[in-house]
Length: 517
Image 1 (spheres, rainbow, N blue to C red):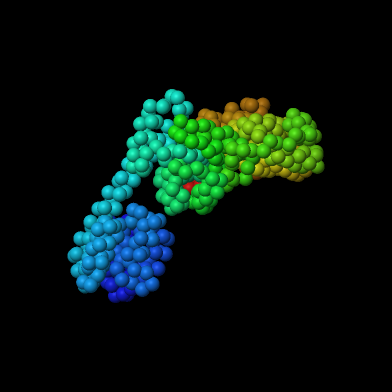
Image 2: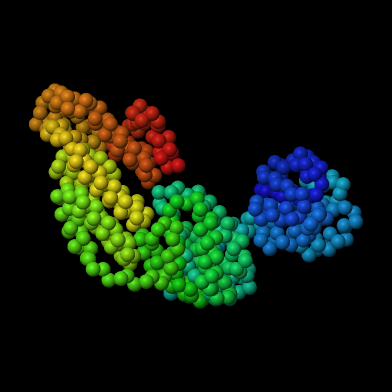
């Protein structure tokens, strides 16, 4: 818990800091202020659970400070320190505000007893909030289901929820938001609760209620509702505050639904926010996508014609044509945001597959993100935005043309050996004999040719290939390390760990941690 000590006497502030057994009270953050104005500023900045304050201070009294703090932090618990002459004035304030007080000169045992009561009260408030949060989370998930199918359960939940706030009028005006965060980002288990806490001030200012829940990994739904109608400005205030809370998140989209009235229509708002989110792929990360999207301008060039032209350019390795057509492709889709994400990903998959096939036919060295066919779909699906997807294509197109310009023909036997390893590296029984037979060579001659042409032994190349593939897989948090060891041809995960550390200088877990930071 956090505490703010506000007192204009330096000796009082320092004496309390040194004398009170804060650890026993469960208090681990202590802030101080020398008057009410500074106390108010620090309270709004640090959001203390308990405020221990003198009654009479320069510029702003403790009572005035309490009134202003409670406008923003209604759950903060106050304990006042007062002299004898303040007693009657203080008692009246206590009756109105339900706070505690200790008399000056201070007795540390008395201060600790008052703070212990305040800490218990804080814990009780937090427990109630957790219960409220669970109730709100359940409500948020029911709002994502068609009303006709959950009508009775939803009515019951809404009655329980609204009873604390005066009735079902709080659902008179509502709007649903969906927050989608790049699945490659690992979020704290407390991410949603911290987000809700951070939004509390703006929600209170605008008399808003919020029911939020995690729909699935890195996808959250937030339903906002209140008695008075929403205005576009109100939604802007909330989404701006939400953007501030998400400052540390690299890639996210926020989609808004239509404004509706009554619990039976909140699902409609949620449904329209889902539709809005479907068009997020073509927006810059961090965008707010509203339900009213402009109709796209008619395109003069069809996607089928662009695809055919791009495939011809890839086959002919015409770099100038490839550059021109990739720019045209980008403008076509970025200016047609109503296209579905899956449709565009499928097109880009066909282009990258064709590019990969040309690399193989031309016997170009395997390099880049799409050097392996089984990585292609993963690479595409992980792209959070259209801009990232197109950058992936451009990166591989440029690598393709560079490799053609710099290409020195590879020995055909070496090519066959490398190609067989690329296809079969996951087989733990893969042997030199098996590889050499595929290349129609004896084992000893295959090893000699490979070493002369590449400077590596065949086993060194196989190990290197497996380790580089393991690095790519470790960068994806969806794969656990024991599975990765099997995927790259090691039945024994411990042996894989030792081999990886020998190759890279770090253990698989350390390497993954360095890549995911």
